[in-house]
Length: 147
Image 1 (spheres, rainbow, N blue to C red):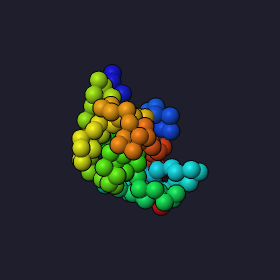
Image 2: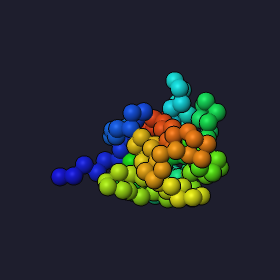
Image 3: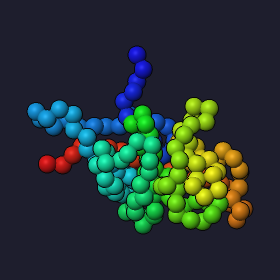
């Protein structure tokens, strides 16, 4: 049997099951997607408001623009929204896919592809400014719904 439970990315790029709550008498509850920046968690939206295969932009408690994605298997990922090649904050509009089994994000600007687990660019090692072409990743979780 294959594990098809929703997954969430962690700070070190590994994947863990998404925690979902259950409302009494209402069946499975979905919960709220949250991202962590530093020690603080920031509410993004309800899990079922994220369209599989698409991203949304969110502002973290630390003041960063973060791109949050739900893949078609239900997994959640959060990375910097800033494209290191163009400097534009557009990665939430990128295209999800996979390469060699790794979940990926293709930038809508110049189409560089990033591994969503660790943020590394799979096409180029450095951005035009000479810095490593790596997106910051953020822990993401589904918190139980509040009453």
